[in-house]
Structure formats: structure tokens, C-alpha cells
Image (cartoon, rainbow, N blue to C red; front, top):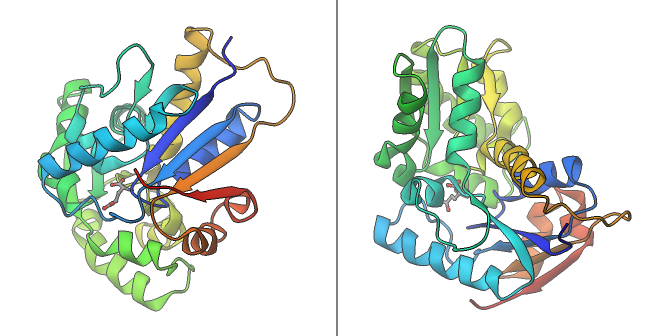
Length: 267
Ligand code: DGL
């Protein structure tokens, strides 16, 4: 048993997709979230820069009482691959949990992946899925505008600009006749409705943040590190830029982030 918090980080709002799922499946756990909103986006930066940012984000979380760290960022997870940035503590990115689920649910063996330019350039989702099943056929597409659209709050199902961008980006994925699509950046599930409308009802959409949260639960269970708290856990949010901007955008997506404690923090 361990009553310390689960540490979660991302460049911005995207990691809240993991927090939302953690709150659902592990309601008694405390969460400490760090969103590096002053340096977003990560996905257009070089591998070296993303690695440096990831190490700094981890160091920030380690200054708090945490028992596990989740890199709830597709870009960081892709750049790290199987290398853990922490010692003596459970760690997961979003890549492998999402790749495993996609390989498990596909029926026709055609899987799409969308992500940031850095994620798609790394080829890491393809590599992870081919390690699990060499026969799956993967179609990958970078969607650089999505992160900005989400951070600006252009997330409504009827938002014309986001819909237009999504139609353009998703065309090659639709043409590849995938039955499963990994939303390979944790920001993308925030515009899931728009993506679902374009892809159609028959396509499974995989949220990497959700899959990482489920993986974290299994990991903490196996190591007997779950809390024994019986009351609801608390979320604390830290951001490296404006608290009010974070609250404003997060409220469309995660009720608690708008009302809970949000702190501004330098890393
Ligand atoms: N949400 C992150 C990801 O999954 C980061 C997006 C970005 O900062 O470019 O890739």
C-alpha cells in the first residue's frame, strides 16, 4: 500500500485524458499533474529538446510525493521508447499501452495512427505494433494543427475550423480502410467527436491517455502500491504558464480542473 500520488505530465491539456480515466478507475488516488503550457508544443521540436523537457518535467514531479509517473504525452513516449526516465519507481508512457490495445481490437489488421510531427517521424507506434504483430498494416499521419486547436479551445463538435483540418488530415487514413485508429497524441481525444464523425461508427478510436491509465492501475495492483484511502482522492494541477488559461480550456473537458487547485510553477 502507498498513499503517495500518481504523477502525470504532458505539454499542456492532453494529459488530462489520462487524469480523467485515472479518476474514474482509481477514484481514491491523489494525482499531481504537470502541464508544461509555457513550452507547448513539444511535437514540433527536435528529439534532443523533447528529451530535455521530459527529464525536467519528471524532475518537477519527483519534487512531490509520487509513487508512479505517467508520461501522458505521445511525443515524449515516442522519443523515450522503452527507456524509463526514472529509477526505482514505476513509469509508463502512453505508446505501448495504446499499441497493445490497437493490436488486440483490430479485426482487419489495418490500423491508423495520428500524432504530432515528432511522434509520426519517430515511427515508434509502427515499431511497437510490429513488435506485437508483424502482420498489421499501419497508416500514419501527422496532424500538427490539432494541438493548437485544442489548446485554443476549438473543441466543439461543430467547430468548422477543426472539422476542416480533421477532414484534410484523416483522408489518407480513411482511404486505407482502417478499422482501428490510435489518437496518438493525448490532445486528440479532446476532439474525439469530430474525429469519430469523420471516421464513422465502425472504426475503434484508441485514446492513449486512457490506455496508459488502465496500464497504471494494473501496474500498481501488481506491486501492491494502491492507496488504502477510502475517501475520494484529490487532484492538484501545476502549469508553467497562465493558470487562468488552463482553467478556461480545461473546464470544457475536465470539470475538476476548472474548480480544483491549479498552481503556476516554474520548472
Ligand atoms: N499531448 C502531447 C502528445 O501527446 C503533446 C503535444 C505537443 O506538445 O505537441 O504528443
